Length: 285
Length: 323
Image 1: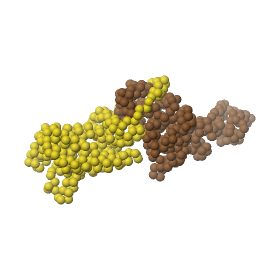
Image 2: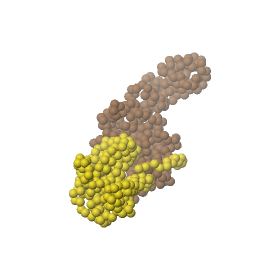
Image 3: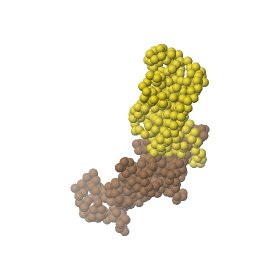
């Protein structure tokens, strides 16, 4: 994600002196409204995330161009060899590659938290009398939009090159919904690293170390049948495998109850564990 | 104005590694006043303010805002304080308007009320024209303004201003001072950290001088100045070659250290008006007469209160003079 925009020189306008009478009028006779609910504060921070996307739209590159690249690359690279034809392979691959890309994209949350937290504005947020996790939840709400966008982009590209989900609209929506819920929970790992590590670079480094093995060592690309036993043991129990299977089956019109339960269970555990650690770090910072 | 203390700290300590950034600070700030915390870079001013604003947890001692503990009762403290940090505490990617609406919403204002309040503030701070621009394109003076505007969205009971004019040109600095005065007029207590003695002199009624994490002097401006000496005499002689003699005569007459200035005909001395019955002016007059008697021609003479600069240098040189 790039936030580098052309930095224009601040204009040296001569500011008019603030009018004393008007200033005074600003300070008197205002009621302090009651503090907002946790949900309302979180939504307000979500709105902030939207505004940031609006002002720096190039940060959407990673949820548009990158996923398209992944779909095309893996479909045409492996399709013929693994499934006989790319049309065959995309039926298997698309839900999995969606899971992989969206889970990969979650790591930008950590980078965003890390760059943001160093700026003065976080001091202001932390001195506000609001529900403490609201700024973090707000980030993730903004990210949910990014995940949705990435899912939609990949689904469209997939359908253009031959993906036909048997599950219809409902199956596809259910699959995406499960993916988003899981990714929201998974993102708390990155808020933790974003707060824990010192620089953006180290956040990126650690994220790669976690995300690559986790997403590749799964059943996203191939069935684990041909893998060595020890690897199968890992792959079959990986949350990404459960999620990929669940999304794949939902989109194919089935109801993979066990894998849905596993995915949601993992989501719950990740959120509780890393949510708690994140908030501890946030309060200590 | 009540006599209740707005800010009270006792033995406040913060340690980073083996650096005792704040090393046992006691402060008592009466409600409705501007309290200046003066010190050089790295003295511990910002660290102290961050603890008071609930951003940092103290390692020792206690701090209370209107009787509420900053650790145990952090939420109650947060609803009454605002902080304007050393670096703009607003989101640089958002516009001025968006920043104010965002914060107003977080303070519980409804959408229309938040917009309304943001409009008023932008107008009052002369930022209406820049309302739709991203803050990263603001000049230094404009950033400070939007920052202070954000701090008074809800008029706070205590406002922390951490070096509010560092890096500003004189005009913008004066405007920030005007804003601070307006805020205090409405009963807000302001704790102001600064490296500029001038600023503390202009705004603060009481001042704590901090160095190496400790308060080395505390009092009203007058008290601090008096602690260094009642006044300072500046002299300019006609002949530079009489300066050495003049120094001796003055040192004897005033019973004080006499400094030779960079200017080869100028001298400066502190006059002590506290330890004797005579006032500083009488002392100085006597010294002047003594110089005339020795045949030293004085072209220019002035007696004034020591500037806070002189106080500050005297205090940081020899610690504990007035502590």
